[in-house]
Length: 197
Image (cartoon, rainbow, N blue to C red; front, side):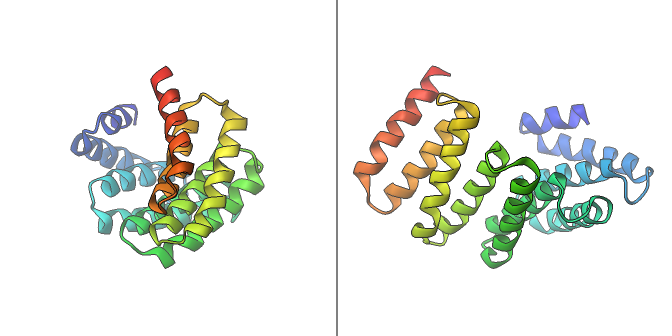
């Protein structure tokens, strides 16, 4: 798994795929409901998603969700990760009506299990905002981006790279609406954080 993660992080997806397939084969021997299996399913699906192999990724995400629900129940953080991953796959394919309920469910689970101020909640809010922005629903996206930004600033500090990303996302929303005076200071602050890092 360590070698697979390293290959993934380096963008060597073919190598990561090969290693993850081997890891998945080993995990299958642990039983159909072993939680180590869900991590491998998610990781392999993510490698496929990043390569645009959506048809190969989808059943892996779905299987991980089924195992998480069976073993852990409907309100567990691991399940939220699997739901979020599948939602991002659907969003990438333009399947917005399939993605939205998964993102909302992941958000609810993370809020319940990790608390409303956790960085995972911010990520989930951001992902839902991206979905709405992609569909042109700017009014729905804006408060989600703002809430996500507030959480990461509070949880990680004002100069964290995740804050820069959140600032940039909100600035992009304003730019898409032609609100350049609102976007510019956000871009500038985001750039300042990135330059410090």
